[in-house]
Image 1 (cartoon, rainbow, N blue to C red):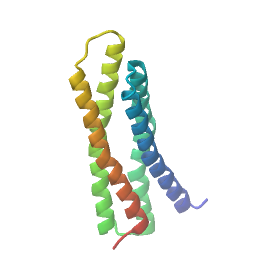
Image 2: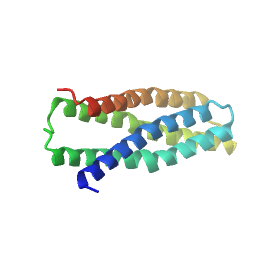
Image 3: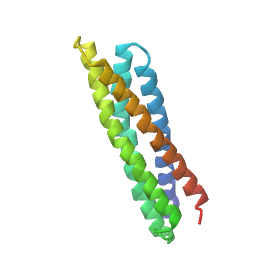
Length: 155
């Protein structure tokens, strides 16, 4: 297969994994934490953290690498306005995702402590879940905008 087509395929697949896994993880995590069952909430939080490290992190690293390689390979101006917007939106999504991962780990640990019989700060847990939820929206909308920019390439 031609290098360009292989690289473009990798870029598209990794973007799909990044976006799709993000939606799936968010749904799974939210359903688990709202289940009312501490064991289900812990399982969801623990599994979400693992999935984020395996899928989201990997795809999130592949995206800028493959994207930059495609820009170089195709001769597209790396400073084209639509690409500058893409870079900025991607950085916003990253800035939202990093604290989300930390929150997921803190939430996971709180549910583990609850299962072990320890008293936890329920208010803090609820605030962390709300913050996690709020931070997910800019990342979701941002990645949807990046998809649009990649397809439309507005001038």
